[in-house]
Length: 147
Image (cartoon, rainbow, N blue to C red; front, side, top):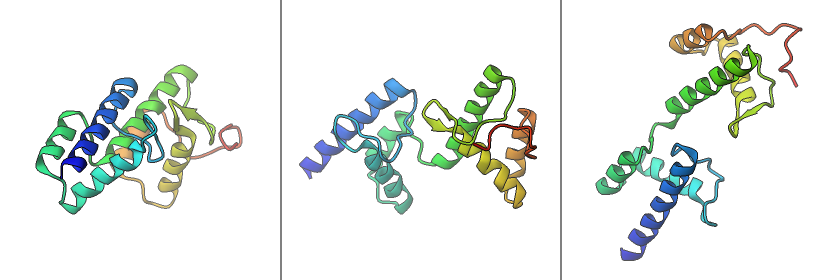
């Protein structure tokens, strides 16, 4: 359908604009670009890939643009990079629970990592990466991130 193709192309161009400005294609679900809900469109593309009903040409164009279909792994790595930047600037990994870094809730992510470790659901490789970064899983009274 010609109209659907035109709409897809329009949304793809908005994605490219977002990437040029932000440096990545991981669009928050509630993000609007040019009064269009780019975040929902991006989520739909991922869903179509999982269901196996994305057109091959569209999938190829998305991949060539740097679009990441498996966001969870990439997001964890991006959050780790934000933690490393935070540590470089602040000298520690004790992030306040509500601390935002580059528009991402780094504090919530740090809390989630501690929680996953405490219930035995932490991936061993990820735990090692965090330890190498100087991350402390045990929260002491002197830490300031429980705000």
